[in-house]
Length: 114
Length: 110
Image (cartoon, rainbow over all chains, first blue to last red; front, side, top):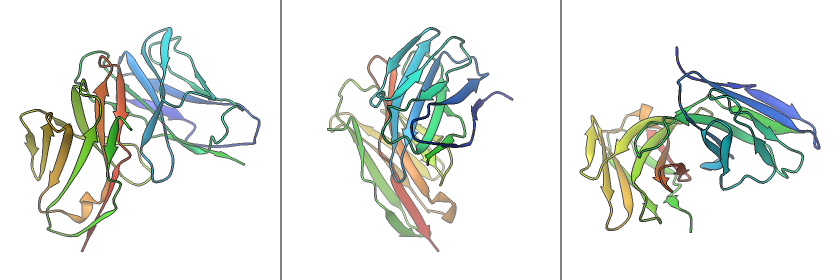
């Protein structure tokens, strides 16, 4: 079955540690996205990528980094520079370009900083 | 001003009622919009796309008003299972960036 897989689902981190969240899709989508969601809030865009080896900052990119070495993979690293990293992180993908196309989401990763 | 804005609610309505909420957008170049539904602690899932001519899917109707720059979602004969957060999404910046509103929380009461 095609879809997006995020791992881990739950992650605990000590302050000062970097963590990497995995996002893999087998939908053959060109575009991939990372969003952050805080309790009771909407989704805020961290980074997005339209093509391999290229990505753009979203609205809240500070303290995060990404890579897009393969079409199917778009990992997100939460660095120690991110001041308030505890949140629900969602990865999504869609067919690139155009103004149509459903955004497919993974099940999310919950990061808690202790 | 946020690019896409929603009234966060919460909206509490009795089962069987009709409920409507809007989403406004600031970028007139925004081309396409969608409504997503998100259940508690789950990922969002597409509810419906929003077309200029308006579109209906069962009990749900979506409208786009370009002159006033808002989209709407109408739910008729609401069910308990409609309780969720509803997110509107706009595609802007040359179809590359998808921007979400903050979501509207809806609770249907028995």
